[in-house]
Length: 77
Image (cartoon, rainbow, N blue to C red; front, side, top):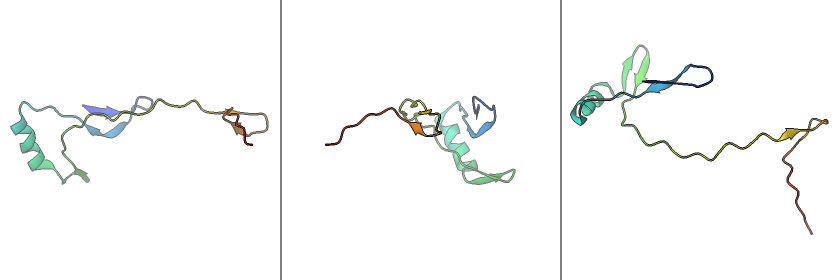
């Protein structure tokens, strides 16, 4: 399965392939890893678990003056 960007639909440049056995996967890696294909170098690696990311932070609002604020109020003294 080719992985695509949700918004643009364009390929992210990688894909996932399932093999019937570990032996077949190792054979594919030995045969294709670091090889040229249509002008690109192909890397064949086992899939890794997805890394956890922090939740996205909302963009700070922009004021009438054009400056942004994060609405954080601090006290020094």
